Length: 135
Image 1: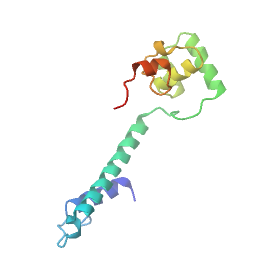
Image 2 (image 1 turned 120 degrees about the vertical axis):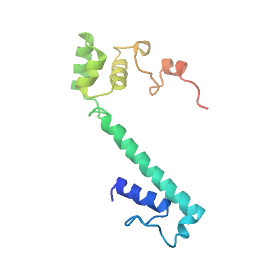
Image 3 (image 1 turned 135 degrees about the horizontal axis):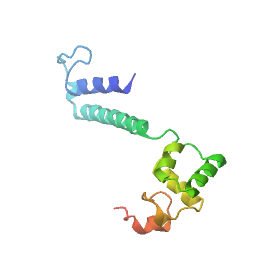
Image 4 (image 1 turned 90 degrees about the horizontal axis):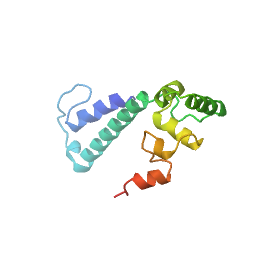
């Protein structure tokens, strides 16, 4: 069952409606129980999160999460040394700006201070110095 259809069913049940007809359920006592209603709401919220995550992923470049090859690293380094804009390089490689800068930093071609993006994943001294401590 698709998440969208399941979400509609859960929302109808939360409202005390028959998911197929839209009519009010005549004996909806079980749906009025606190634990049952909370479970329906939790399921609905979880499905909403799955949908939102899928929408965000659909907007990401195609190579997000794909392992870097030596050839791609070489092409990246050449383009950067040639003065190509990092945003253009990111587009050509199908990667995020953060991924390009992180790889350039790993290759020693860019320092943490030169990055345009916030370096919160690598644990570099620059990231530790600027990241607030978690609550």
